[in-house]
Length: 450
Image 1 (spheres, rainbow, N blue to C red):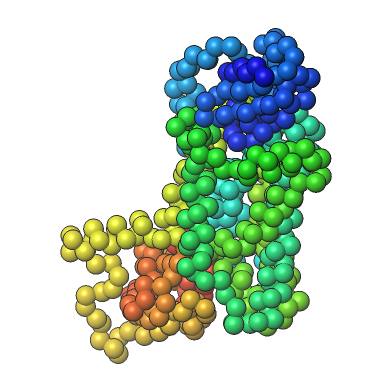
Image 2 (tube, helix red, strand yellow; image 1 turned 120 degrees about the vertical axis):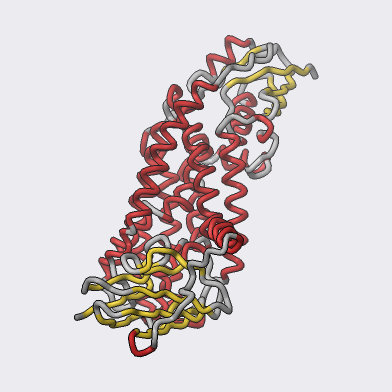
């Protein structure tokens, strides 16, 4: 049987291979098709006359693929990168500004807080650390979802996988909330499991980001099901695809600091019904920002003119989110900072001199991975030196691996097993001050009185 190779322009992901092969096999006379993203080409076997370039380009025009008998010339895309970099930097700047505001510190949460407070808490999470981890995951999968659900379909069809993704999150978090409320303090996802999953997901996101940026060396690595299986999914109607639902369901294994706080409240509620409602409303709050991310990706990727630019912007953002998540998960930035401070003789973790006991207020807490800091509520007097000691019995992890008191102690201290962290400060104003992590997630309260 005769064979022939065509060169293709416009392929971006592994799903493109399956879609092109499926479309070619529907052409009369073509018995075999094998598309390759890495080569930017497709090999066919045919029993009748081979299809002409004009015929193929007409068939694939709507999908955005262009066929040729000769390899396409490499185009200089540097101009596109510059514009994409500027847009990405603006988005990153806005994200960091929101994270720096510490909006979560304005909400004091515990197991007895009103249920609507957890919805607002979820909204804040959705535009900060959850946007970095889960939003980055959504961006990295958007291209494949667009191809799977019909690039030329209605807007609802293109956004449908994002609704399924968030539906999966709602189901899993609600079930988890009920389980946490039932089991109380006996259940908690291991921090080591979370760390491994974050590394795995980050590696996949990084690979997809590099492919989005058009770095051909990474196109040889497939992040997809085997073609025999993915081909069956592609042939299904959009309503039959469940992959986004399953991925969304599994995201409860990737908690950010905000999620840990909500899960802790569900645990301490001691009630399956209240635990379910706490995490249901929390994840419902995160859904709105995540849907906004999904809507924008569906809108831009469906436009052939904007698609390539959007992919570059998304690729840069995903690389930033990967670095951001790994830094907060493993405290790389803090580790470098602490080692630099040690070499230069700087020590920010505690005072070298202690004020006489009679002239200071001493408050103490113990940190464990299960219960966070206990006790987590303190009352001190204005104008008198306070010495706050935190005995660390477990390593902190993720964005909850630091502790600070914005307005009183603004330098995040790392929670490392075996250490006793010391913060000394003199409150100048009365009022309530949140004890938080570096991301502003609340973990306690310090009340200053006259």
